[in-house]
Image (cartoon, rainbow, N blue to C red; front, side):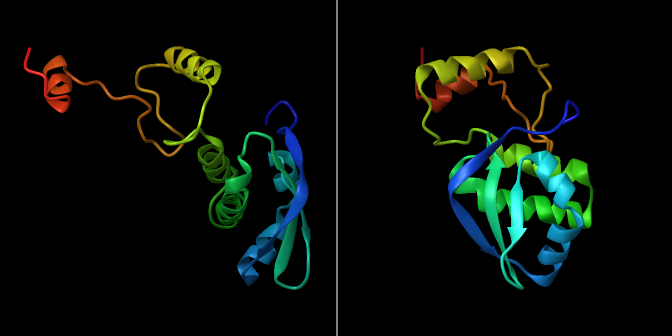
Length: 142
């Protein structure tokens, strides 16, 4: 973001969101910040917004939730809170399908971080299990 914004991906079909009054105000007041995060959003009626583009790293299924959380972060807290929310919505999650090369890349990136690394909200990115505990989880007694 410091280098000039986030990569954006135009949507083939725009997403129309219904917003509360506070969301409409946050959208209007933070259009530049949203653009720098990779969102291209326009008003689409008195209580609606149309998302024309979204951050390239955000899966299509999470765009609506990510935008709503970013708007809440910008309205209630700060750009840092909005960035943390966007990072979490753009992250690979449990159950997401990944091909082996993506799996290797993620493991390599994880290995390059410090052992105490956390997600933007403070959750750990790794868990250390003792050998005995690992064996117990798989019900092995050797």
